[in-house]
Structure formats: structure tokens, C-alpha cells
Image (cartoon, rainbow over all chains, first blue to last red):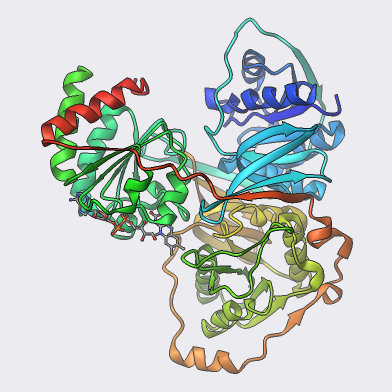
Length: 328
Length: 265
Ligand SMILES: Cc1cc2nc3c(=O)[nH]c(=O)nc-3n(C[C@H](O)[C@H](O)[C@H](O)COP(=O)(O)OP(=O)(O)OC[C@H]3O[C@@H](n4cnc5c(N)ncnc54)[C@H](O)[C@@H]3O)c2cc1C
């Protein structure tokens, strides 16, 4: 239908995680508001499993483009296929995750179709038949709500974990619409030579729990203690820019305006003062714990639980308690 | 090689922000401008590329008069040419229109091998202009680049490393390419005094919509497909509970509270 809600399902060489389907949840909500259906679209080489899974997470239809040229993600190939699908079917809105892949495909698709797009949305709802999209702007100090009056489809990227995961029901089925679209290798600009897996096993943006450290951590040794806590909790380690600039931890861990934007369920900030640029990257976390020596540190104004004290004494104690209570 | 650096002037985040509420755009005049932090890395990468492979750097910036400051800074860093893209018709452009104007300037410059831009701006924060630019120009789209391994100008190729979720992707791409860079790809240098003095005397040329031959109906606030309907200050999270007592009691209390959330698996 012309006012359907489409969700781009990202994957890497056929590999996917439940998070790949997260937007089918909010997609369904929007489709209910518009009186239409939520559909998935998948581009790739071997995508049968992903297609099945998309139905289980609530897609009523799945549109696919398949071909060997889509082996391995390449922005230009995927964006061309995505633009083709969106232009042909003109759904009301197409949702992409605000990840590197989602951003690459959505931005290039929007440009191919000649539209602007709304990025990193944290709120989406239907109001009087119109979709309103809310995003943080200017270092998280403001939120702006945007409508898209001209583009069809409206192209939107959504902050990972901003909306609840949809329920999974493996018995659900739906219609697969296979579209033929091919490009020749000569028309593509890029070739992936290799992928070097990072030693960091937990992806900061997807992590439910983040233990983060700032200048107050004092050294790379200090970060080992935070890592121990993160490991016990199955979480990831984050950092402020001051800690990254001090070279205690690589940039890929930086949270904030010029780092990653995260929205974990628990964010534990140790020795972080809570500068605006840091808050921009983590203030929408569900529960924020702040550990800081300075009772006047601004981080306490944003913390669910605040502890005034030295992390060097507190964190090892907290590790010890978790070990006992969680039997680890 | 012919190298273009796209740079943007952004308000200093420390400064107070003024919104033009009816239009939903930032009032950029009257604010202290700085070069968008990510674009400093783009500019530095352009300088390094010129050092290693020869060529000319042309820096472009779309923006009001104030944008001259960041272009002058680029001149002080010894880029060869700068152009400011400005026209009343550009005001209120969305990401597509911005990329469209930048693309028109790059076409006008002509025979470009590589375009460097920052991953995102710290004001608009959309992080898509690089990708849109590549799509409009039909250039290779290389985003999140953490390292440029090698240019092969003769064979029109480049190999870069992209820092994406879970690791580093090594990509070979045809030139011309748009490379958007992340923080940490290099250490941006500062201009020296002589550079600053020289730059202060140079007249900065401006290109308007007619110079660029762009279709005004695709531009600006009137045609932007996304419109701001509301601007709000997010509700403060509100200070929560401060846990007090002996270290042992605090550790007990906080671990209980976090376990109660049922998030820890
Ligand atoms: C354009 C721009 C972009 C920026 N982007 C980012 C960004 O992406 N991310 C980011 O984080 N910052 C960013 N910043 C920097 C930001 O403004 C702050 O400088 C930075 O976040 C401060 O880091 P911090 O809190 O670790 O350090 P500080 O502000 O120095 O705070 C250290 C804190 O540790 C506490 N402390 C010290 N010792 C201990 C101890 N033993 N136990 C407990 N507490 C202790 C102190 O009381 C203090 O509050 C940006 C700045 C600019 C201008």
C-alpha cells in the first residue's frame, strides 16, 4: 500500500542479530497510526533466513533484492538497490537504524531520490495522519520535532535502542516480494579487501550496560578496574574525551558529541564531570550511576544514583559485591 | 592530485544558541564560530595528502559571511584556493540541498580526485552530507574513514580503513572519492604566524547560485523536505538519589538497586 511503513533490515554477509529487526516494533506502531502495514526490505546475497526472521518480528511483507553482487555490504551497491525499491513502491516512510550501514544506505538513497532525511530520531509518532519525528540537536541541549512534507518516502534513521524490541513469534508468515535489480561490477566503485575484527568484543552502541571512565580514572591501569566491572556485568567500557585524549583508552570508546551516542539500560560514569558534550552522548540512558569525588560535579544533576567518593575505593567494592550476589 | 576539503563553520557549543523559531533553523549570525571539529581532521588529511602526493587543495564552505573565518584559517594552513558558497537562496537548506550545492561547486572546480569532509557537524549533527555528496557526484562513498592507506593517482585508486561496528573494514575504491573522516585519523596542525598574516590579506571569493548553476527550486528553506515544527529543551533528567554511608553500605545499596532493574544477565 502506498502509505506502508518500510524497515530496512541490516546484516553483514547474511549475518544478523535480533537488533537488525528492532525497528519493526516502532514501524508497526506507525503503521497502526497510518492504517497501513509494516514491511521489511532486505538486500543481499543469501537472505532467506533473514526474510523468515523478519516475519517472526512482525513484518507483513518482505521486499527483497538478491544477487551475488550484493555479497558483503557495499554502500553504493546497497544504496542503488534501496533507491530502486523505494522509488518503485513509494512507501510513506522508510526506517533505517542510525548505524554506519543504516546511515550510508539511507543517506545515499535520499540523495539518489533527491530528498532530505531526518537522522538519529529518538521519537516517532503519527499525529493527524502526519508522522512527527523528534531528534536531539545541538549537543543534546535541544530536541527538535520535524515533519517531512514533500518526500515520499520520508527517509529516517533511528537511534539504536530508542524504541522497544518487537515481540518474536516464529509461527508468523507473510508474503515475499522478490524484485529483480542488478548492477554490474563495473558500475560499482568499491571493493572490500578485508575486515579486521576489533578486540573489543562488545559493541558500545548495542551494549545494555556501559561502565565509563573520565579524567578522574587517572591512568590506563584505572581502566582495567572498570573493564573488570564491565566484564562481570556483560557490558562495554566507555570513556570521556579527556580519558581518550590522555590515551588511556582508544577513541572507539569515546561517548559524547564527538564520539558515540549511546542509550544503554545502565550507564556507570566514573570520574566523569558531566560536561555538556559528554551528556550529549549518554543522557538518554535509562539509569545513570555517577561516581565522582566532587559533590558539585554536574554529572550528579543527571544521575539516577549518585555516589560521592573515590572510584578507586568504590569500584573494587562494587565488583566484590556483584561477584557474591551474582555468583560470579 | 586535485584535493577538495569541505569545511563548515559551527557555533562553539559552549556558546548560547539562538534559534530562529518560525523557521526552525539556527541563527548563525552573532555566534562565535569555530571550524567544525571533524572538519579540522578533513583539512589536515588534505594537507597530508598534498605533502605525500603533490597537488592543490581547494577548501570550500557554504555559509554566511562568518564562514570566511574558517576559510581564512584554511588559507593560513596553506591551502591553495578557497571559495565561500553563499546565496540568499541557500538559507535554510536541508542536508540534500547542502550536498547539492557542495556537489555543484566540486563540479565547477572540475577534475577533482578526492573530497575530504568531516564525519558530521557538531551543530546539525546529521552526519550524512558526505554520503549524499558521493551519491550526487557518483564518486566513491567512503565514510567513517580512520586511515587513508594509499592513493594510487595513476590508476585512480585509493585504499582506506573504515572504523565501523565491530572492527576495521579495508576498502579499495575508485577515484574520485568522497572521504569523510573521523576523529583521530590525524593530529590537526595549527597555522603559524606567517600563514595567518598572509591569509589575512587575501580576498575570499564567493560563488552564488548563478555562479554554480544550481536549480534554486531545489534549495533553501522553501524547498527543504524536512521542516521543524517544534523546538524544545529536553526535560532535565532531574537529580536522583545520592547514596550515602560507609563504602561497604554504598556498594551494597547500589548493587542491589542495579540487580533489581533486571538488566544484568
Ligand atoms: C567541540 C567539543 C566536542 C567535545 N566532545 C566530547 C565528547 O564527545 N565526549 C566527551 O566526553 N567530551 C567531549 N568534549 C570535552 C568536554 O567538554 C569535557 O572537557 C570532557 O567531557 C571532560 O571529561 P571528564 O569529565 O573525563 O574530565 P573532567 O571534566 O576533568 O572531570 C573529571 C572528573 O573526575 C572527578 N574525579 C577525579 N578523581 C576522581 C576519583 N579518584 N574518583 C572519582 N572521581 C574523580 C573529578 O571530580 C571531575 O569531576 C568536547 C568538547 C568540545 C569543545
